[in-house]
Image (tube, rainbow, N blue to C red; front, side):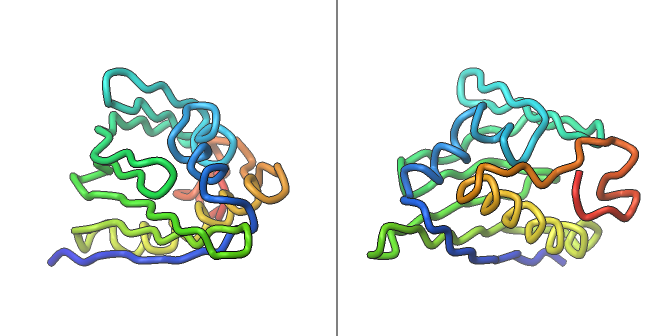
Length: 142
């Protein structure tokens, strides 16, 4: 069976700033991946635990939508809306997640979104960047 994952987070910075953390190589490297390289609509993502992913960009509408194809073919969507007070409400969805990945992915997005919040609002990287102390070893950071 496949299910969707949905999380929301509020950020105190404007959508254009948040969008830069999602849609640029430098932005993604500040909170999500060790290295990112975009080529012809494909993201080459390198994670601290040694995993790599080639992720096609499915949608790019600055500053409100960034979507990509994720592990096991799931679609990940970041939808951003101005909160009317200078900040951003971000809705994350990972669509069609299989049972084998659902529990890990559901919890993993919480850690990722909190890392994004720390990077956007405080310019802090919460990750430890230690492959031996990643998600698969029971650590909440990577």
